[in-house]
Image (cartoon, rainbow, N blue to C red; front, side):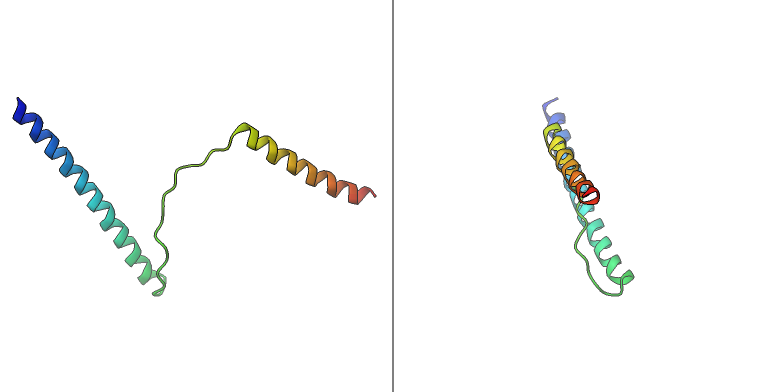
Length: 79
């Protein structure tokens, strides 16, 4: 059974390596495809980013700043 676990580990590493290679090939195809579609102007590679979140305190600060801007505009209109 020891040999079986070694084989499974090797296959898992190979799958990871192949997935990484496939990702790189896909990125290259995308980049080259855009060159031909966009008239030869290469663009930066598309980067998938993790969705950013903001804390409740940060939202409160942003909301307070926006309310202050609105109050300033209303004060100019009234005065």
